[in-house]
Image 1 (tube, rainbow, N blue to C red):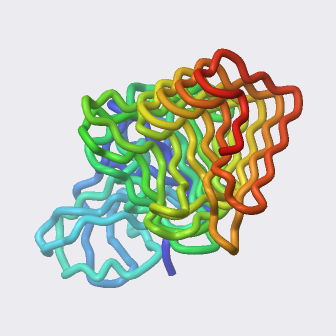
Image 2 (image 1 turned 135 degrees about the vertical axis):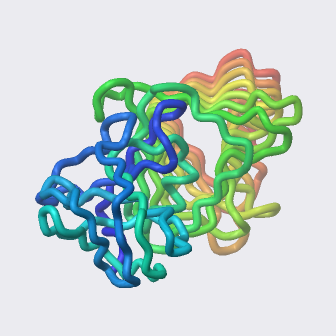
Length: 337
């Protein structure tokens, strides 16, 4: 077995801890203890034996479905996160896979409480997991977050203010020179909702790009991008493209080059792209197989240093605009190069 694909993780910048359990499997018989800053249970009485069983006299029914952070003790344990799948009250918990740990006593078991960093949550997660971020502080990265979950995944990252689903935004930033915020390593289905992505470094870098592979179906909803070289870079000629890139109610501003660069199909609903040093949106050629298009609805391209939208004359490029405004850009509102 492994941690369940339906696991939901909680991240609380500056308030959580990367030694908390951090995750819960909805529909389990236990209680979700992740939506709090501190661990619900911080035990030091665990005993491992190299199987899926961890003995603890503190075992109770509401632990089931939570992710436990297991570490320490006398058995040379390598710390890791395990899903609690069952328990015997006052005797033991059973986890999703063999701990593979040398028999030892005094093992620590932290159950419940939020993670402090998305990098720790991502390291513990598996495909199709969901990550919630509460606006308890600014989440600051010093190194690029690589998303390596493989194909046929659906990964969701969702910010909120006080209650999950309230639409509140969380700031996700870097001040480290030449640091890409997020780099995709795999191909399918990522969704980011309710974030303010910023780069405040002296030497900024791209916000989102990929590892020289086509990335399919990436969605941003209610997000702000500010201060990057490009908020999103899907240039087929230099790195590779995003196929079905969607921005819904997003703002892209203050990039030192183009706001958005892509060679694949790009859809924008209710977006505001402004104040970027070069073009607001730059549609580049996607080669012979995937030539891109842009569909913009109720969107504004304003005061960009190049064109509002620039098409580089690649074959079969299509641009459609419905109820949009292109105003006060240095060059044309929409330009076919």
